[in-house]
Length: 187
Image 1 (tube, one colour):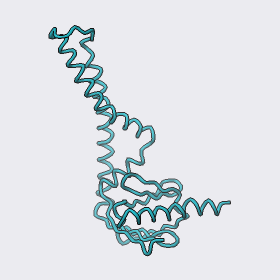
Image 2 (cartoon, helix red, strand yellow; image 1 turned 90 degrees about the vertical axis):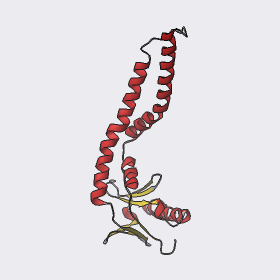
Image 3 (cartoon, helix red, strand yellow; image 1 turned 90 degrees about the horizontal axis):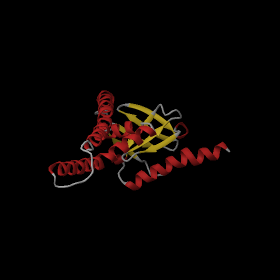
Image 4 (tube, one colour; image 1 turned 30 degrees about the vertical axis):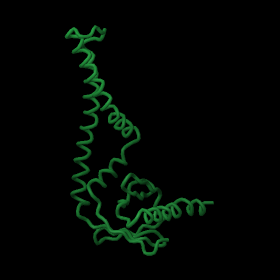
């Protein structure tokens, strides 16, 4: 176990938004990724169809392409952009307000113990025992320790660890304590 591992951090708006995005349903994330991936190909397809239709109308090319072809492509582009922007804007606005009211400018400290870890939120202490942690998730920049119902989640930004090695050691301890030992004690 790393000797007296203690990290101090603040949860930034980007950390909070990444956490809130991780809470999205699998289907919603799939549709968002699909809409993001379709944006560029649809732009290329729209530009090409407009060029071909313009060339056909000017008499430069004699291709059997209907003049209305760019319209459904433009419609698909608009639909994907609306899907990407409107729900995200309202969800982002809600998450930003929640972050400003509860999380911004709050000092957090995580201190590893033999039984779990102390999680200080400002001056308040939450003593988290390993047996209370049901699942450990990680996104690109944030570690998430959740209870059984995923109603309570503790966030630790990965950047708060002094080194990549210490973060990996911490995750190995978390895995050991929440998966391996728990599985051993159930048998």
